[in-house]
Image (cartoon, rainbow, N blue to C red):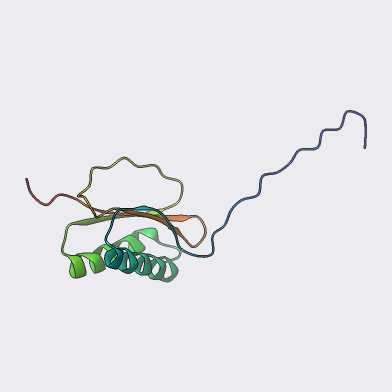
Length: 107
């Protein structure tokens, strides 16, 4: 090793092989259902996040009544207004994030 050689450390990427819930205020039953739906949809539509989001939205709308909104993807930021007790932000399949929330249906 030369006297002026600098050793550069490469940070390790964290890859989760399990569903990781980052934030939620959903009731436990709804949270478990939503997380299972996200894992299933992302595995089924691994190459098409739009189809995965549609599958999650349709299933949640049928089970818990509309209007749910779903975003599935990688490397995005968000700022939303949502109905209380309806937000879920999670990671699945490594670095794929799923954001689920219910909008206010009427004022």
